[in-house]
Length: 222
Image (tube, rainbow, N blue to C red; front, top):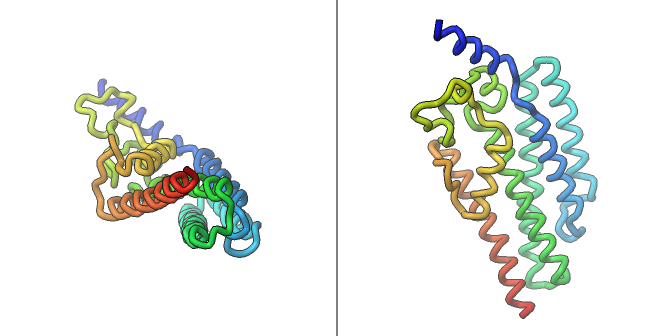
């Protein structure tokens, strides 16, 4: 009798897919952040990143609705690649603008802040897409017991019935990415796989570069 509720609970968890709207909100915020950068820190016209994201995310969401998970996954990777390249190129242009002083102090500080936020959102999207096969694969399992990150809920020695069906959502990966950019480490979530360790190192290095730019500019204004 005690096994029936557990089985039904797992079926409910597998039947209820993870909501995708938090990732879409993050993606919208990310593209909006890119459009706020000055022209000297953008590659191509201002609408380029937004246009590419819309051109990829629209068929991706249609494929998700139609149950074409493979197409949805491939287009999702393409979207993440576009925003990652846009962020890296903008960061390179930001660093190049420091010696030439083509941008004013306030504009430079604001651009560095935008790129720091973009760094958090970009890597949150990557962690969300890659961990344990991505959201589609996590939906199929119903319970998250194995992945690239050891969330505290996974290490609970005596989980409740509700926690047995726990699976990370986008906000969990956003929290992980935020901690990595602020503390330069994942804090409460150990990193298990090699690809995840590499990504967290890259994110921490990018964050450190941006913070160094902010500090150097602040010292220069003293």
